[in-house]
Length: 165
Length: 392
Image 1 (cartoon, rainbow over the protein chains, first blue to last red):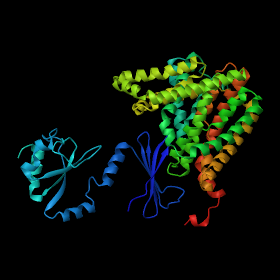
Image 2 (tube, chains in turn green, orange; image 1 turned 90 degrees about the horizontal axis):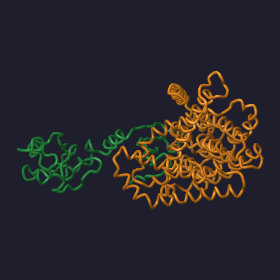
Image 3 (cartoon, rainbow over the protein chains, first blue to last red; image 1 turned 135 degrees about the vertical axis):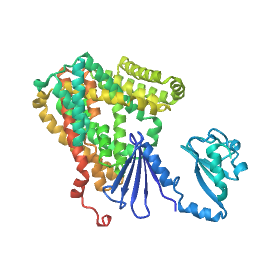
Image 4 (cartoon, each protein chain N blue to C red; image 1 turned 90 degrees about the vertical axis):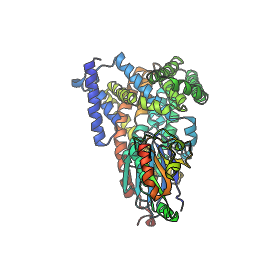
């Protein structure tokens, strides 16, 4: 069910987003102009005082967003998807910081040709690459979203870490 | 002012500021208090610093930075995007509290330009104190916060015009009108510049090496302040418009980031220097005016916020919270009084009364306002019964 998100400008402060939770509470998120984020939780929609207020700086807020958004743990829906793929699997593979393949395009890396694994997307800040192209470049901090058979991953990880097989 | 005196001053500002913060009130009254303590007036034991060209200059820089930041926040685009409350809520507040201000002004100074200045000083609430309260008391998620901020925005706009004439108006009616027209023209020209000059300014500032970026921005800021002054208005409106001109550029955030510390330091000194010229000895002479103005302000602001809230479709308690949040007066009241203090068309007696009144008035309303704002939900629960079904 889509969430009815309400956006309000707070002149001189920032922007506020609010929505009702399915359990009858209310959440309000304030993005301050100076980068601070606040999350207000009201147990009941019309409560006078918030039950909890969470204050985060920019880095913490991004981290929390990534965790809640499912960038770290694969949520249930992804597991179901994997079941549907049968023999194939989807793996999130972080690129090692010292990988010799940093700065090379996917085509130059030759993942599919050498290991059979296909890179379908790249997770990176601030904007993930959906539908990775052969010309996309592997960068430090990337996490590659891949499709392949389980047995092919050992070779893939070796290639990613060492540059050769 | 020697370095040792400056060190002592800044230390005292820091200590009192931390104390105010700990007590949950704004730092502005604390800075004013520091000025009163160290200034040449009562109490004499602690008189350490005398107003001089140096303190005047520092205060001027503080004023310029304060208004520059205000200007950066209000681009045409942002004004357009702010909600429906600005016009309605702002007008209710303007009519009610403008009238109260004018009443007090006329009682104090008769039908004169001084009355008009005093009216403006009593009309404007403090954006700084209220916004800090909204954050500290965890009110940002409340619906009525939109209304409160909208009313403050309307007040900021109204004050922009006051800044144009407070420093040089008075004298003949025609002369005052002329100043007003000039202010209007200057504001219009700056708004136009913010629209058409944003791109070229962007390209220029973006290409500059970082250290010179700071210098050029500062030159533009002080230059516009000086220009406004040359044109017979106040440096305040020039600084405000420098902010408006830069508000549409893409470097706005970087400017804010780099000038933040300058503003905080010089704004603190600005309030301190203003405090220097407050004569607490005038309390005896002005007590009756304060006894009139402070309760009227509390009632007027609460009533205006309440009325604006009810008209805007808020509940009684929410409307009461809106009014309570607007009681505190601060930076604008001081700025208006400071500009008027430099206006030679006002008599000496009027100017010193205005300064002392503004200082004591801000001390009173800022303290009372923050306490009432903090407790407004509790007060609301006692005063206003809630329809049954909302609870449980």
